[in-house]
Length: 66
Image 1: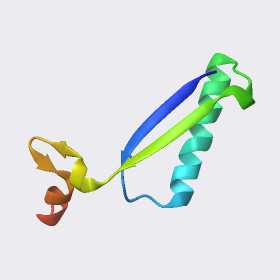
Image 2 (image 1 turned 180 degrees about the vertical axis):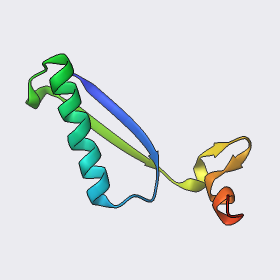
Image 3 (image 1 turned 135 degrees about the vertical axis):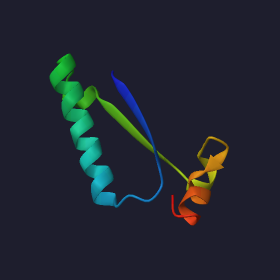
Image 4 (image 1 turned 30 degrees about the vertical axis):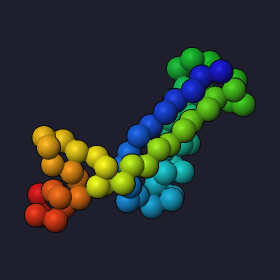
């Protein structure tokens, strides 16, 4: 049973997340030949205040316009 986990920062529309799930599922099915019902996709959305790069959170970067 393939399991794919995707972690993103919060802020995307539900339709965009749904499209991502569909595309990831299709890629796994196509590339591995896995049965559709056995494929699992988990999308985790992390608050921008909890995601940092270079000692700056994404929320801090957003607030300074970067």
